[in-house]
Length: 405
Image (cartoon, rainbow, N blue to C red; front, side, top):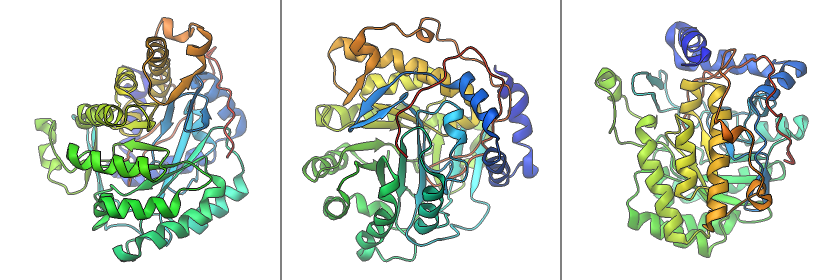
């Protein structure tokens, strides 16, 4: 057990009287105020240099922060300092909206899971564009997750997404099209063949566009969606969003399991891996995959890579395990990517270690430093986090990046 798990997480989980959303707001504010020297020290401790390339974008390592942690991009400089090789902000909508009624975020601690019904609460696409314009590049690739405004009728969804896209695509290294959150009425119908075709026709352009899918789709439904993605120029798939299922919940958490909303965390681990594997097999590796869901241990990231993912995202695992998981997952994923490349398998990703044949120094031990300060809590594609962090430097290699914005 790391210092974060034994000492820091219990404190964070008591912030706001145990209210996960209040803890999220508190810790995001702390992250946003971290001074430059502290970020440099944190990066020296947690960053892993394991460059990969996917859908034409170069990533300093394959472990990213999932959408929902920092919806409005208020703490963007902090995430690379915590070791993340890319960051996905949002989900953002064309219209600012408050989201669903509170309480709307629940920790299932024994299950290492989260249920959220946030409802795309965000300040709107124009506000995010203004923030990104002022901030400039963050040193790692930036993804922007787009969703439909609640006030917009489904028949006008394409125009709603297009409004956000026009405002935000200049600042993005890739665009994620979120049609799979369970917390906006009717949104998942946009995964249907005709609807996703219309969306991709409107949005595919100069920046890579990836489609985020639900883990609750049947394999025939996923196959149909993938056919549209391939024929309409999608650059990849993000698999998966949160689930409406309640499988794998510990007995101690059953009372909380009755809350409505999407479930993330450890109960989703195996389902996410199976969906990633199906997408990879069904497309023959032609669509790069960002694997997300249930990455609570470093080996979970490696298993997603083995299943066909090019990149991996964290949120619930980061909440429960802290920034040491980011580093350990990057080391484990790097080892997995090197193995995939040497075996000749394709996941739509190029690893520089695999190309040069270099043996990664961290991978030999798989060691990950324990967190020395506060870090995170509370995710989902529509959820926030209790994330906060500070750390003492170590001799870990600082990540070197070529991300644009």
